[in-house]
Length: 134
Length: 162
Image 1 (cartoon, each protein chain N blue to C red):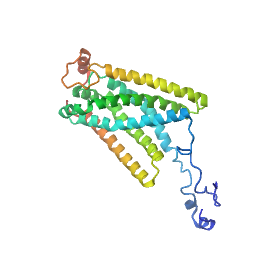
Image 2 (cartoon, rainbow over the protein chains, first blue to last red):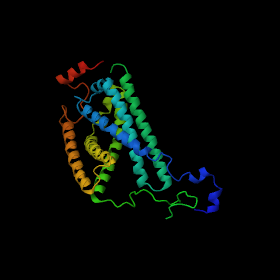
Image 3 (cartoon, rainbow over the protein chains, first blue to last red):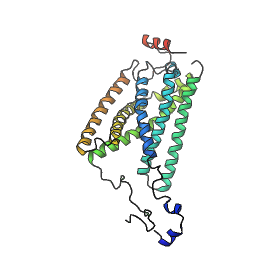
Image 4 (cartoon, chains in turn green, yellow):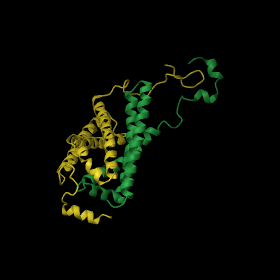
């Protein structure tokens, strides 16, 4: 600390700011758990229903995605998987990239990429699901 | 390290939660923790591919058929198998983490046992999924449009809403 005199001149808020819990410390942890529980269901659904398709040609896939029973879980899967991935990659970057500038850049890049991937995936499913006949 | 400053607030340089450089991991912990992270990283690498696949579907039939050379490339087929392995491992190791979060199974002997259970179950699950993917009608490759339909396929198309 730089000294007691300085500390006493600072406001009460200034003294505590940055020192501890603002009740947001568990947000990342909790969101990671929520998304992981959701992905147990959504991930298994995606893998099984994809592998159960008779073929991967355009017509089969488009008919599959047109069904409401596919479009909704597929959109949820794309969004939640991207979200969970952003949280996980964030922890990996925070643990392995120690230089502040590189870490900030890597975290920003990761978040941008994840948002683009998530939004593009959801848009693509919507376009197929709401489009005309294949 | 001082725990508090004179004003009662915690001093700077306060203790950090244990992380990689200060926490001595045991063999099993290191094995399963690191591989769960690696599996998650592999699955994250699958996301751009997933988005590319959806976008090419949304771009129309001609565009989608033209991506077969990319999406059906042998290197990517091997990567799909790796994705299935990573999915199986991350799923089961993740369930183990969720059980740990409830405060159960944290004893060393329990966690050692569960590490082997995770490895065994995920290898079996990955084997089943990869076998299923490779034994599908038409094989692992992406069949071209207009491939002959099996009766079950034709029936499923007939049932699907237009």
